[in-house]
Every structure is written in C-alpha cells, then in structure tokens.
Length: 273
Image 1 (cartoon, rainbow, N blue to C red):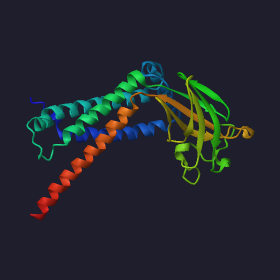
Image 2: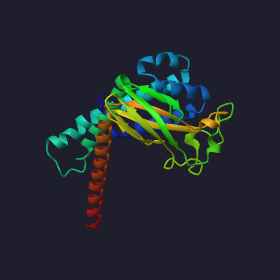
Image 3: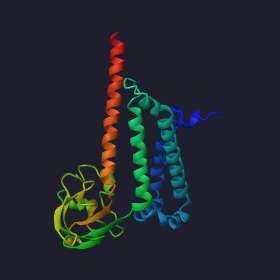
Image 4: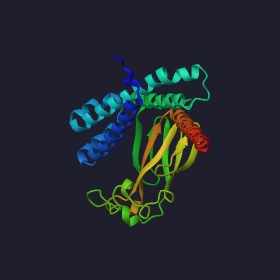
C-alpha cells in the first residue's frame, strides 16, 4: 500500500481543520474554573513538571495529548510533502512553477514548529509578580522595579471585591471603553548588575532588555487597598529564540505574499488570453 496519503494536501487540510477545532475545544475547557487554574499552572512550569498537575485534570491531559498528536502529524505531513513533492521542483530549477514558493513556506513552518518545541521542552519558563509602585522582584540576573503606573481609564471598574472580582471582569473580556491598552502602561527600571535600563510596558506591549521581555498582563486595585493605587501583574520571560521566531514569521508572511502574487498573476494572465 502506497503511503502517498501521509504527505497529501488533503491530509494537511483535514489536520488544519482538526487543529482549529481542537483549539476551540481547549478554549471551551478553559472556561471551567478548575481547568483554567491547571492551564495557568502549566504555563508557569517547565514541561518536566507537568505530570503531577495533569494527573489531577484528566480533561486537560486528554486535550493536551490530542493537541501534541495533531501537531506531530501535521509536522510529519509538512516534512514529507516538502521532501517528496516540493524539493524536486527546486532541484530541477523550475523557477516558473506556480509551486516554487511552497517549499520555503513549508520549511519556515517546520522551523516555527521546531523553535516552539525547543522552547517548550528546554527553555519555557517565566517569572511573574504583582507589584505596587516602588516594589521590585528578581528574574534571573535582573532586578526589576516598578517605578510608576500610568492608568488613564476608569479605576472604579478595576476595583476588586472580597472575592477578587471587579466590575470590568477579566482583562481579556474588557471592552476598549473599559480598558484601552494604548493609554495604560507601567514604567520599570531593570538592573542587571552592570547597567540600569528604564522603559514602559503595557498589556501585550513588551519592554525588552537584552533577552528579558517584560509584559503587563493585568491592572487592578486590591480589595480595601485603594490607598496603594493601581497594582500591576507583570510577567518576565527569558527567551533567546525570540529573534528567530520573529525572523521566521516575517519570512513566512513574505513567502505567503509572494506565493499569492504568483497565483494572482497567473490567474490574471489566463483571464486575459
């Protein structure tokens, strides 16, 4: 029996659909409070320490195993397709082939998978802290101090009650009227023992110092601590592969654009004949 199906476009399409549906299922699972806490815990731990949390959350474990299996199958399909179908096009220098840019797209996709795998197994990990103005925490060789919080939206919406909930709810559920990421930021000073660097970080807006990336993930006012002002939850990530990620994603977008242009041009010429 031939194994052509392993590197077929049909299998790739089916796997992409399944991955999308699987992610949607994961979002539904994360809506349960117990599962959400497990996901948060996994995000804070290296992969070598995942076994114990997953034994207490079989649904999350099944979802994660399924996701890994789908991604491995998609990686194998992409690699075989690149080697068996697309590499001969480049080897024979068929530069006018409409599929000429498909090999770079596949290779860059595999590199993204590879970097994510290396990050997950060998590098993944971060430090997080909840700070008020003037407080600090350590992350690796860095001392990080919060010097100022510039919060311009309505602070009454982020005041927490005794259960830790606020009128605006989780930051990912807030409307732009309740929370505008462009207007709210935190100012930090980072000291690595040799130099001090200051800068601003915001929600999904990083402040970078060498291989350290600071991101603010939440603004809030704790219950009955209004006098302390707005507190900030910050995540510090050390990832030397970040630049490679950006390079691969940039080249991948460029390759997709070129491939789309090639198809458009060929279709346009056929339509004018």
